[in-house]
Length: 125
Image (cartoon, rainbow, N blue to C red; front, side, top):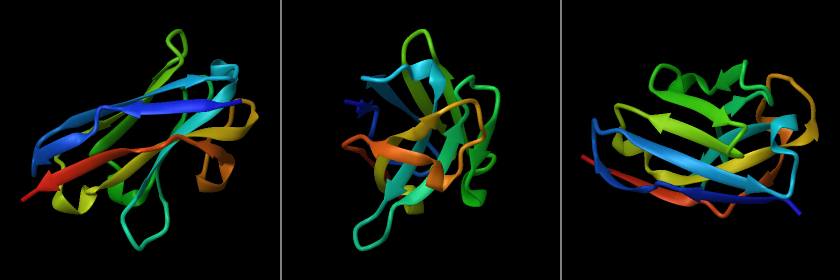
């Protein structure tokens, strides 16, 4: 059973940076694409970023390009989301996600089938 445990969320001020981590277990981590989503109350889950199983290819939502960076360490079974120049509108619960199938591909929102419990990120103005 896939388990994804996020950490690193918190309360920061606008303009600050934050790095989220997600520790994965129950899957051959290096064989699966990984990603991050976020959700605010009353809205659907929004794709933030994805990374191929090898880490060589990434994908981002347009609004996150240039501010957010996804990376992974296959030796540590961990995926990261570096968030810079945070804005109040980035306030959300951030979820780690694992791909539905193994393989080295550029993930899109529909590529994912498992999610963690989420970590809250709050950006004050």
